[in-house]
Image 1 (cartoon, rainbow, N blue to C red):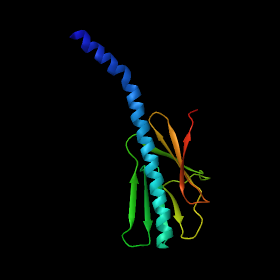
Image 2: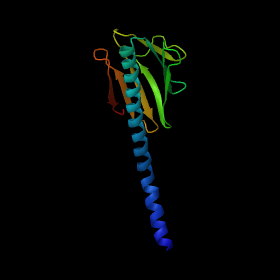
Image 3: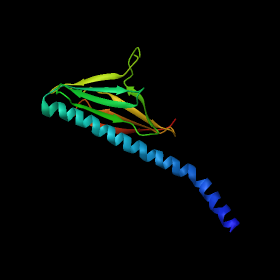
Image 4: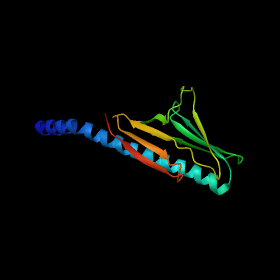
Length: 144
């Protein structure tokens, strides 16, 4: 019985890092899909309601918020545990303190920004707003 428990413990110890990495990978994929949907909803709201929508990206709070001129309209997206907003691209020169803000205007071009997410294992994905179509697209970033 002791030998069986030792073998099971050894197998669990060996497989734990792989399971942990795969869970973090699923969280990163889920977060990028949620982020793409969030940005798409903000752009769609701006066009359909013919109202400007402000998107606030806070690296410090690890969250995004949208505001509209419609009273009471706010939406918030918090990143899940283990996934962080690493950068907003292109980087500002000089870098400013505080959240990054952008305005989506009805009938206007969508800003060509990207939001880079990372997980604890160093995997990165970028969600970019395409300035031509206005739709977000997800890119995987290769590890260096």
